[in-house]
Image 1 (tube, rainbow, N blue to C red):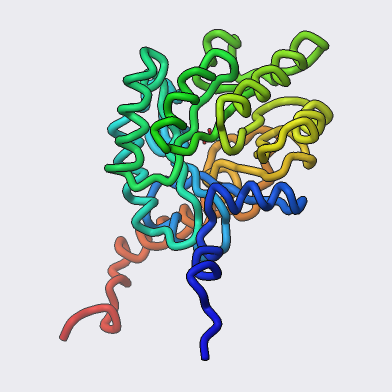
Image 2: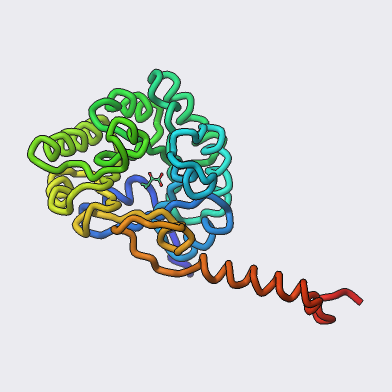
Length: 275
Ligand code: KIV
């Protein structure tokens, strides 16, 4: 007789409560960005816990210099593709610039779209104390929120570039206060981006919710990377990125061979033609 209960079946899907339990047990979690069905399915099958439909799609999918032009319609569209492919991972939609800054009402409306039209299980938004009230409003609408503090790419112009945050006493205090504000507002997890490893370790020890680091050292509860960076599909990657594959050169080589075989009339050969 099968011993699969509803509870054990639920355990297979990564959920907001299961991530909280992981932190309590001292277990780590993995998060990758995904923007389409094909990669979402690969990462989900590989056991990645959280798939983030990041507004980094502005950089790596659209070829823009910053994430600022990404729209809520684009995030909803890509979230739908990722959700469709996912059986186990928690899907988080990244709220783009302009979709939550104007008013809490608009933020809730856009977060609802991510869940209702995109199929997201949660949303992420950047900022600490400044967005705490907005996080509270979205959480009250029963939508789990992931925070994002430290280097927040949507604040690129205020920061004067993509600069490491939290250096010096005042900088470190700001990051700690932002992370605490996000937790207090009801976020279930927080991304710590571009902060010194010691500071990320201290914040991780201070918070009850999981921290997910990117360029924040090894002591966070989880780690996230942009898929194009870790798969070797980007022209340039920051120094904190580890490249786990070189798909860019594999794809370029395949395209070159295809072009050569077309030019030489070697493709399609009889094995790849209908009779
Ligand atoms: O948009 C994104 O990919 C992100 C990650 C870098 C955390 O926010």
